[in-house]
Image 1: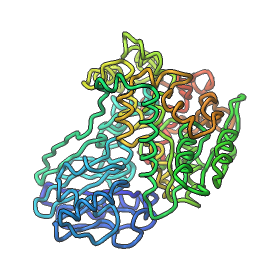
Image 2: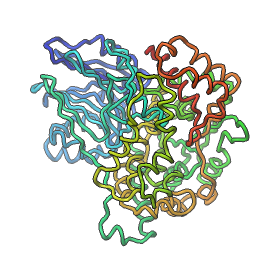
Image 3: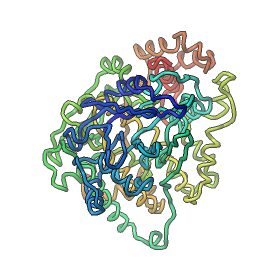
Image 4: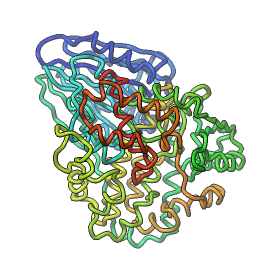
Length: 591
């Protein structure tokens, strides 16, 4: 797990090494163990390293293979790299390291752009060809690893972090009106390739981008999630689906143990992380380190789930660590959490993951986490109503988005008003082939879009802020493909959804964890903004830069400040915090 960056010139000038150095320095937290820069002519690349696989200098990056004429900077983990290495050895390739970075290089030489189809894991990388001068960028199927880029002025720059990319200089901070519409509708989710900044893009998940020496670009999507089912899928029994899910999840969890350092688990006390712990124990892992975080309660809303995480920790005899964060500690930590965000993320639990990661990183460099199960196995409240929907676009938006288009027009200033871009995005996505039933269309957009730019990005950003690698077994692409084949009724049935996963889990974990009311990762102080938190928010929106940006009407902001607890989104978020977080992120990054 690392940070990568680089510059490619198309105008005959040499690459700007100082710009690459700025980007590399801006991502030191992502790779605190080592760093390096390669520069030759029109190409320069930087890397920050977190040593997880092959701790020796042999896997240092940027990695150059002079024999093959290739160089690489890479962020991620390829879990099947030992098997791929064996295959490449049989093809005659020689290796000088024992890690996965070199396997990617050899795989690219052997299979070209199709190498990404061979990888099981999370990754974002750039490979440059010495002889042709082309550069190949790639991102994993579910977008677990980020990759931002900016192309203008005869060059292209890329980086693992948007703020690091912006800090390289010469990039406009103009807000993208369409991205702002998405941000305000989809609780901070801005679907790729857009970002909140008009001139910075992000490579879509499951996509490659070849950059030619003359600046030409060839973007290709190599993975599409299909919900099509054959006759055997439709006839398979519910019990058989449970067996298939457990078998695939066992494999997914086992794959993510590949490391040369110990692997722990973030244990929230919910079904998903508890099942990971149970499967690791089943596989023979002893004295596993598990971690939970909790906050102060507000308005009788519980701020921790220690009761349930304790049940799991006792059942599987883990080395359990409970981390309690007081409100007094929460506020001073907000700046660090926001600074760690590659894009503004409104979800309250971002700071929770940030503080949890700080403590976990003191004992572990790698953890497994339960993110993604709700989207993959239909665990949210808006999924059951979509089973029988005859107006899927309208019904989905009514259940999911934070505000109507009319409200957006009423609260924003003229320069940011336009069409209902968010509704159009959903309608276009629902029309794509590969999903016929409304529930399948819903699960596809949540798995491939909303999941990527909310929980997945949040976990990556907050863990990497402390040099901690998070691995997400529920986002193994083979498990996702399996779940997509399961008929919707097997996922939305039962209590609170995830029916097939819950029934399969009964063989592994205590029923108290399975049958509990659905929990969240709550940070009540950022939902019910009052006291010093309200003063903090007032300082943000009263800063001159907020007025200068002229995004939101003053009357609306004043209403939120007057009654912050009365303005809550359908998904239980604070509308005041949504606006304040965006502005605070912009101020923190000098945008």
